[in-house]
Length: 240
Ligand code: ATP
Image (cartoon, rainbow, N blue to C red; front, side, top):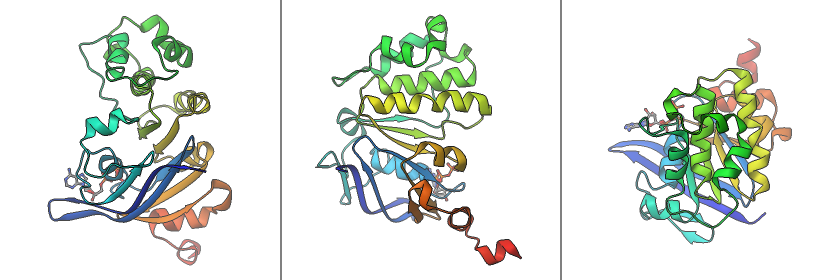
């Protein structure tokens, strides 16, 4: 599969504190990849580094065949990377539809229009003129995903989209993933719910303390391998 995103040896710092230590991650064209790992493992930092929100100047981050390390975030967004941020961050004074239209600023050509978003998330149709903040948590998450899709990204980045939502709502939101992929969009999801990550992704990377501790297809990884890579435990300790 042709790589869409490829990082080689990516590092990231907050001042003197090093958060990422040589991360190699690849997302293929149209692929769905999940990043899992415990709190503080570096998942959000990875997203910030590839989107230009923290500097990756002088490093190796290829996106769609272009070196994007050190580029400003708005250039990277225009090239087709869109983020669904943790906590949704809707504009509280704007309606659902206005929030969606903001995502279309600098829009690239592609299948995602207001109508296509309402078809993907029919719950939003009746709420289109309501303030985004008057919606349920699940509906707000749909708006946040819709807003990112409105730019017609090649790669959709989703940071903890199931956080704080009921299991049924999480299921409904994840039902959109195959439909999003049908349009050719690749997806990178950061997910604390390992079962959900395994169900949705073609490949999984587990991060631990700023490093990739495990990678593979969901079928190829055992529960023990995942537990070890996630928590730093091993099978013997678990059995003890
Ligand atoms: P979570 O699920 O809690 O968001 P995460 O895997 O996304 O976890 P990060 O948020 O990327 O982890 O954090 C990685 C490390 O960087 C942690 O040690 C964290 O405390 C630190 N860190 C994150 N943001 C900052 C910041 N703005 N300033 C300093 N340190 C930070």
